[in-house]
Amino acid sequence: MIIPYPALEQHLKKQCAPVYLVTGLDLYLFHQAVTLIKQAWKHTSQDTHEESISSVQQAADWAQSFQEANTYSLFSNHSLLDLRFDKKTLDAASKKHLQSYLEHPNPSSLVLIQAPSLPAKQVQSLVTHPNIVHTHITPLTPQAFKKFIAQRLQTLQLRCDSDVPDLIYQYHQANLLACSQFIEQLSLMHDTTHILDQATIMTYLRDQSEFTLYELGDACLSAQTTKAIHIFRQLNQAQTEPTLILWLLSQEVRKLIQLHHLLQSMSYQAACQQLKIWSQKTAMYQQASQRLSVTTLYTLLKICQYLDEQLKSNRSTGIWYELEQLILKIA
Picture 1 (cartoon, rainbow, N blue to C red):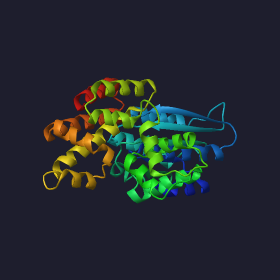
Picture 2: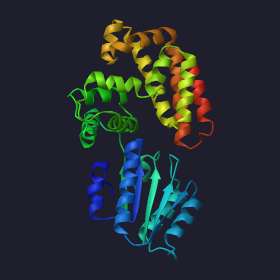
Picture 3: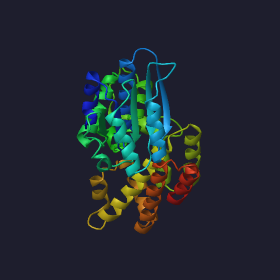
Picture 4: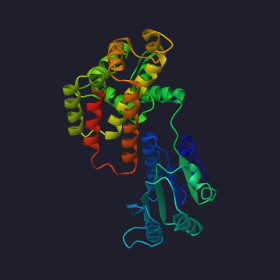
């Protein structure tokens, strides 16, 4: 059974399936889907319950996990098995174990499979089974993203001018997690008796702390290498998600590539307008575009893609060193 993310909460109010499979690479929506499933399960199993987490990368791992799912606990009446799968392909033996469990699931167990990198087509033959619900997370459209921003601002009782959601979107497009975190910070920093306008939002975007992601991007664009490394190391100490830092760097590299291509057919000012680069940042982008060639930028983009694969495959032991080397190349 396929249940899209927007319909998942309503589905969970009616029933919990024996098995849930969540796929897709939007970190925020993925986390929200997992949270909804776990909360619904805990509400359903109000008596004693336990939760366990297992990594299932090989067929033997799946077999062992489903054996555990069919084993009744001595200490609780219900159990949730949180299975983590990091690969992009599910082999035939693993599918067979999953298919076998779907035929005879344990009514006292809920199996939640988190497989962010697994393409939907890999499980087409499995998700037609009535005992499994598949939710594939897809990024929000720009319109839905802006609606999300407006709803979050309203939920947190932050009154704002009508153009504020658009401004927040321009700084966070394609990264719902960073956007949500920024709005949460706004709710803590801003006096709710005052209406948020563009000038106030820009102040928060630039000056929320001495080591913001936005300042890291500005330092890289301006070739302020020492400042960029200082901010980066402060972000590391503050336990900022490396995924967010990589997203920021990737966005800047992509925008510079787009800028190079547009400059072949229009003026710099027109190109900045088309890319919606704020007037306060046009000088930074001009300096960076003159300093970094298209060839260099495409090389940097390949590095970003490589690091993204490392993060998604949990092979990211030296990710902070790799990110620092990337910043040195950009700045």
